[in-house]
Length: 289
Image (cartoon, rainbow, N blue to C red; front, top):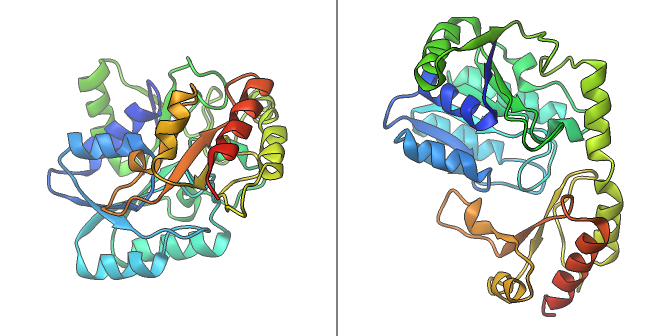
């Protein structure tokens, strides 16, 4: 069953309200969506950072954490990760689902950018439906101002989730996982697919240009159609770029542990193409050898 919310952030909030108690431990990537950090703090939860690689979270480290610590849930973005852009393959997803089962952990799967991947492996919600909470919304794939989200829940958690929605917004909305307006993680309406495809198209030429502007062999972590790109850089670069009127996100916003990588997150999709490419070139040219 699905609970309909006012955006993905509220969906995450309701899921945490339903699943957790203050002091619970949640495993999360060492770099992740900044909004989840705010929610963890608001719910007084303990974050357990998991080391990340260029292709996904370090699942050996996650296994070890779950063996030594009472992890309540694992927060993950398996399809077009924010900010690193990876897509976990089927083997990684199967192992993650198996780890959650063996350690009796719940999974919170964030599908905000999943629409950008044309042929993703099955979502974790399909691989471990009894313990996975899938959240997503329509602000990224349809329109930024459309504050509509949903959470696909295991049936046994539906009642406390709708109670939490009633407390937060008065008037919870519940649908089947095949709601024609938002759909399930695995089935979308033709209209949704058409809109999502249109939303993803403008990004690819910019990313091709980003690769062409590669500087000093500096590697970037990038998905073929993703909107952000993470590029390792000196920490002071964000200040230099701000003086030029180019605002970028540093790794501090995404880091959940003490280690802060020297990196920027470049968002290339929103400005007009000529502006985005000019800012990209200025950014790359500012990176020292």
